[in-house]
Image (cartoon, rainbow, N blue to C red; front, side):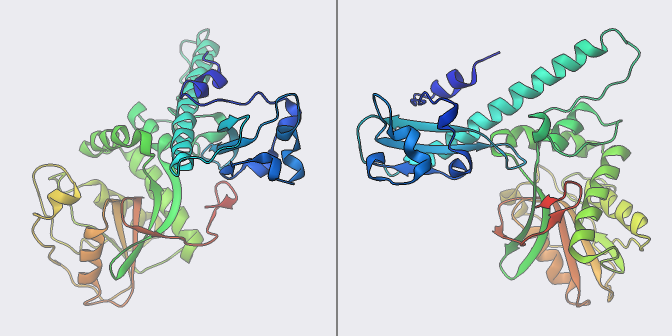
Amino acid sequence: MVDRSFLIGRHGLMVPEMSADHNLGAFADAPLLFEDLQRETEPRLAPLQSGDRPLRFFASAPIFNERFRRIGLVSVADHHPRSPDKYLISTLLGISDIVGEVLYKMDKENNIDAEKQNCSSAPNKHTSYSIGGFAENSAPPVPDGHSTVELFLLDTLVERKSILSRNAISYLSLRAWRKPMKKHQIAALRQIKAAPTPDFVDTISQEIIDGLDRLVGERPARIVTHIPCGHSRKDDCLSRLLAKQIAARLNLPFVPVFKPIFSSGTSHPKANLRRPAMEMETPIVDPVLLIDDVASSGRHMEEAIGLLRQSTDVVLPVAWIGGNASARPPGEMPDHRHGRPA
């Protein structure tokens, strides 16, 4: 087991030796920067200002788990006052993200090893393992039956309800990529989309329904449709399967409004610029729930919403994973599985 203070210190930053009395508590829940601590009168800083060699310069960034609980600090300190480089705080924030991810993986690996030992005496017992962080840091429990790849994706994506915008349209997203793991998450999703399992479709569909229930109620529209299938080059792509399952659970008609657009290559914003334009196969007039699995740039959402609004006044667009569109805070949208603000 790697010592955590050693792990942080390996980044070349000095980690101040603090006793239990030096705990800054909630005061350290935001980035801190003091060029000269001797000029500060905040009582909670007194432990840093006292002793044989009091600190003068101090900067830190909190390490959070994905439940927004602070689990530590990445800090740099000096016994002499100094003016920091303007990039110091952004560097500390970047390191705090990296350290948080490493600790996340270390703790989960330890949990998995312990679970394997507990189950070694019961070889016929079925066990599901989550891939990802601290016990309190992992994503919501998912039902048994998921593959390891599915569990990895479900457990490592960030739960983040956001209103994303592209030009004149906005849409809801429920999850976001975790930056240090993004390329692995994308690879996992591509593998899943090649042959989506009923368990995976069922879990994501329920997650979308739960998010909509909190935002607009139980029956947010009169029909359900989806962004047209494209790079998967098959009729039952993930967005279509999700839309069909959501429609069935909400007891609403599923209507495939758009013609499929089968494209070669991978689904990437630059590649999508060469994709043929969407075409409506079935114009609709009722309020419609529009489903997509991933909205990387919001371009597909923008195009589909524009076409739908030619025949209906109400379009409610939802993407399971949001990408690079501009985020607009949705306010206090509670996540009713955890009883906390999203």
